[in-house]
Image 1 (tube, rainbow, N blue to C red):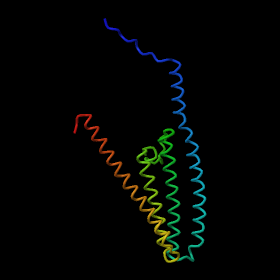
Image 2 (cartoon, one colour):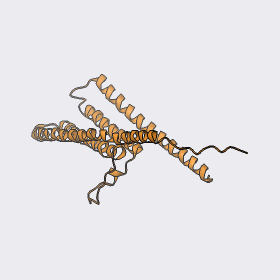
Image 3 (cartoon, rainbow, N blue to C red):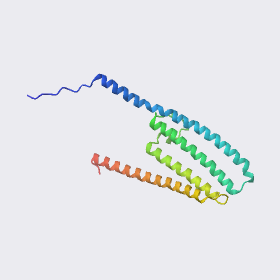
Image 4 (cartoon, one colour):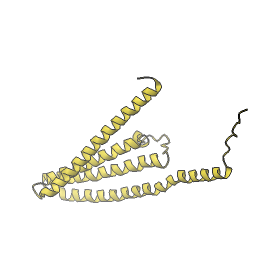
Length: 192
């Protein structure tokens, strides 16, 4: 005669503690919400700075040289790109880590705002950083006649290249990871 083992019955007290702990961990995601709200406030501060820069650009434009105009425009583009970076972090970070955003059928709602996953977020962040660093290098290059500091210029180019290489390595890593996942999925399904 064989002995049957008794069915497993979890301790109700331990199960309540486990459920409470898991709920606390799950709800801790809301601790990130104030960070995103703070970034929205920083976007408003950036808008104020942009308006001040735009006003100064307009006031000084009539007497400026062409290179000064180009550098001024690049400065405005730089601030706009930084604003885009903040928006990307706020929307995709909130959507990925806190709660889903319901656009409610708003006609102006950009498609990407609720469709950027963590891999897409990394790529968009790095692409924005590359664009911002490229603007900084271009501004320094446009100002090369006025103020040329070879060491500063070398640092700007070096940092920009580091960002470019990082983006390329991330893209390669994502592609290899995607191919690996596809191969693994094909192997499981018996397709290959």
